[in-house]
Image (cartoon, rainbow, N blue to C red; front, side, top):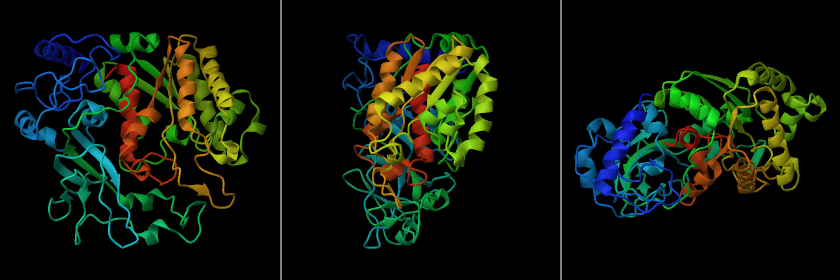
Length: 452
């Protein structure tokens, strides 16, 4: 278990510094949202920890936020920069660290031909670096970007950070439109406007945090804690399949890497997610009712379902992540009804459990699809359903089974969207996660599985 012992020791150190807080709804051992990170994910804890103060919305044993100067004094230089894939920095929950690593933002030319200020998840107190989406290009503060007094970023004239032009964002013809006309849905175009920023925050986090495993997912937990080999099966739609990412791994693959990084388990992951599918169609596959499956996805669906058939009998963990297409107006004026969606997900669970009765189930709620978008031809809304209601339904399913847990991606992302633009999270401007949002998916999923 590569990091578990370190986590335990650091948690003891943090407890000794802080003292006992009153028990509450937090997860035992969950790190506070502070620059002094007791899990060792952000900095080598060589300085003096700050005194107890802030309620971080993570747990009841918390540490005060450090000043920028304090944080810099205890953080090694290597932890102030990210120039390539870094499993620890990519998977540490953003609310557990004062340093916000590789937060993504999307830059679109405005109607005046310039760019609007970039609002981040937190007001930035110090920008450590701004990079291209693939992290290969490092930009210069003052020349390429400016940190404003309110914690936003401005892009000055002549900057090497260039927005996606409106001429590229808006197209003459396209499947999807917003109120101004047809828009591009091509990642090759949309990623021209995606960048990342690593910065220090001193504001606390009062939003929704990821569900912790606690005493749930017994089959998975037993094997992961013992460092035994794990078989993981993924069922779902294009988001689960990995659509939307460009420069970094799909969130399911990052999850596989994260499990192996934080435990001694070797993971075999089978991804049987089908792009374009909604929950009733997946039930159609299960029930061998191909009339329920759209002709456009039938061949791919059969091939992916064959993977599920081969892997279901040995699955220790099944990750079910479906809902984006259910939310579309083509599934009804308000998407798939919640009751139908719930029944379909329950049928997917039964499908796995019939073959592997002790399989742990992780239900992953869906990120928000773009509420500005509609189908150009039909006018159907892309986000016709209220995805938070789907998340509530999944939570209800998980509440009735000790071996089922919800990874509340939608709830966590909704807190981020309180400040950030929806386009920051989308790799295609429509309904697929950007590389940044894929990291958020991974953080929530791993937090649910491993109590990060």
